[in-house]
Length: 232
Image 1: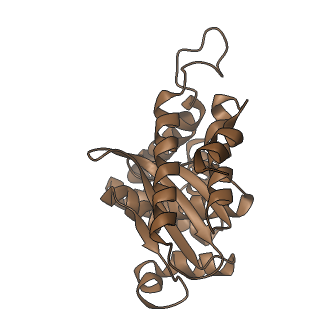
Image 2 (image 1 turned 135 degrees about the horizontal axis):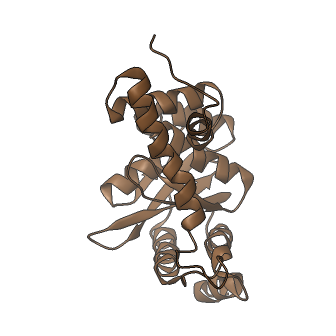
């Protein structure tokens, strides 16, 4: 079956909100990978959007919480990052904490493809493999094609479809609202600790990782006064 046929079959009849996840599943069908996820680029940290499996969702959220990993590196560079062996060598040394956590989850390689164009990166398509290894040139081109379709899907999604007749926001508004809590929490932590925004975000991420939670979960607790950061 042709690549275009697999993609078309995968998204046929899907609601707009389902398309990113369907494309992740199509990527797994088309490539020698076990899982896939998609994240949007945002100031401060990536926003997890969808995934083909709970494991991929976990790894996507992990990178957002750590602020480190192939996904964040690809988003910053606006170029593909192909981490072919997280068990040892350069890739393991480049993202040591993520690499360790990924291998615990059974992932040995990650291929992060940027979404966008030559001037703007709007996010990444992350492909996870359970054995080390490189993608062939043809497989890289296939990954780039899926990333291109994902980019078109994200930029062409209709507005307001999930918000009822009065909906004026992007269908991603729920994600945006959740992510706004991160910025609110960072502001509150800045006041509580007397630090700048970078240090406040770092403390938020460190606390989330230490408690095996996502940064979004900890941010929610800070905003709703369930958690407070006190000076050491």
